[in-house]
Length: 409
Image (cartoon, rainbow, N blue to C red; front, top):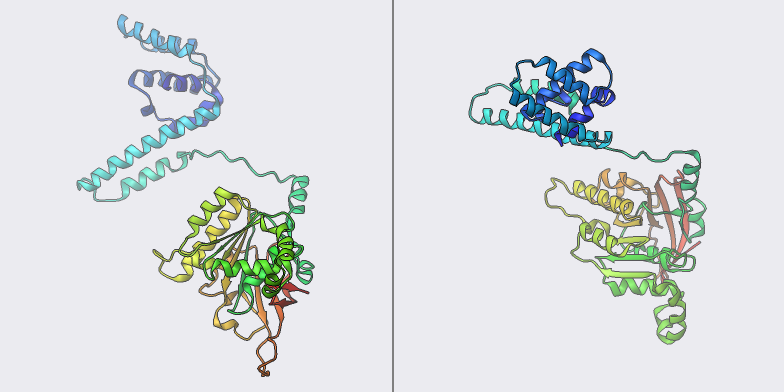
């Protein structure tokens, strides 16, 4: 390897890129090190690419005191160099980078031993070393830059709404979502969070009807209760009607059933969610509830743990090419309010909200005095409090048909 590097250093362009401390003599054995010094001298004097024959002639001329045995040894060494092919620039760059890092590592390790043994009492030697090598420490990095041609950007942005919402009042403001998006949905208890995602996925025109393979990971309610919402949303029938006419319900449920998978994920964490996405490659993943997948150990505050959890969810969405829906509770500040904001997310300051591409907070009308036989107000308000997809912010209004878990407008 060192002979191939010496052969590569005879190329003027490569030499200029790696001269000096980027390619220290210490990288080479003692005999090869002397040949490199001849290359250094030739480059400084002639400023052009040199051949192995030229370097051999210069080396022999500048070392007249060599014995016959030494001359024979160096002649053999030059013969090996002539048979070497210069490394490709990219490979030689990586090899030199690795060797250079090893040299610096040895210097730092030796300095560390001096500090441990008490031979050094100042950080000045370390500072000088950092100054000496800082500009020459080349990371092993090769970036393939993203395509930003106009045609590519137009085509990619046209696909932003691959999965469209099936609530008319919502789709007029936010058409839909795509792979890589993190969508956070929050509401107070007993507002209709589970019905909301069941309606988006399983009811007519929902994501499952559009062909999306959906995985629902629930850790709050039992999977059978979540599944029941999906069944009623898909069929438009109440549970009593389904029991009375199971054949009709089965036919209405069939078009979406194979695209929906539900699993009780109680006690699981985000690493497990990532494994699920890697194994089953879904188009859409829904976490109900997202915060309960967070690991709180090792964090000073709960909001830090939730931020890390949301970051992991977003990374999963991007890496495994799926849309990630993250259900969350809202704090008591949202109770009885129609107009909601990001600060009302339970247990979070800014971190969790910062990761979302789209954030929808669901509100219902404040309770009013009503008779015992009056039905609860079915109007719901979808607050779009963060929207990196279309930029629109505000509220849209719809109704919750709670008996069938469908949101309509």
